[in-house]
Image 1 (cartoon, one colour):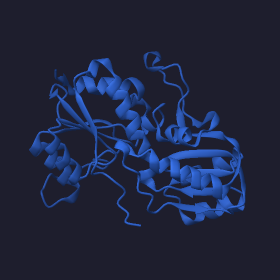
Image 2: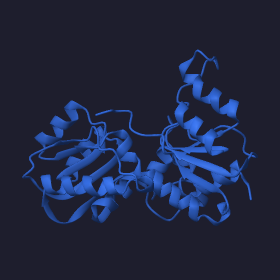
Image 3: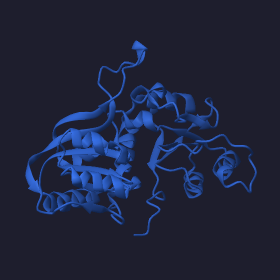
Length: 282
């Protein structure tokens, strides 16, 4: 039995309200109509042309993505405008596109929390708490924010914990397919003892000072630049750079599990993209 795009949006916004998104972000239904009947949903991190074709082949009427396809205003919808190609293709195939970005990053289904679960961290706390909602109807009764901090079950050498972490992360790949670990980087002495870990999914270089202030021995994130790594090392903190995709991919599984268990969406087919992956070869 089909549901509507608007109902799917309401289900997502129960755990990641649009009001949580940053002012510069662009979340919600970006392409499509709220009244469109939905029988199949494709979940992805990125809305690429390949993913749109995958959605068409799957027979999906809606793509639920983490990254918005429209950040800056489109000046035209011309076929020779690269920024317009995905929206045009979505309209051509009559496929909707819903984005849950910084609002999902702050939810209980964030990849930061998923990665903390992979490592088995204890005493988990939010790294940077967000301001509570002014609307009491959107207060989910739980603190929200970016990133997490926690402790390993027992102290480990950096080389050991990193090897264990990557092994577990690879095995936890979507649909039993191991995650590609190409491009993963580690900075720090392999003999360094690690107790406290801070994790921020996505591009987390700006959180290096916060992680240092919290006394982290290891900071795990994606897209860390040269100078941020130097600052971390000078402060005595190791850095693990998973790359943007791998640092956020576990969130797709969490979102899939949540939507699949939602009673309002029973009977709807849901699939995580098997096309979307890290753009890096190595």
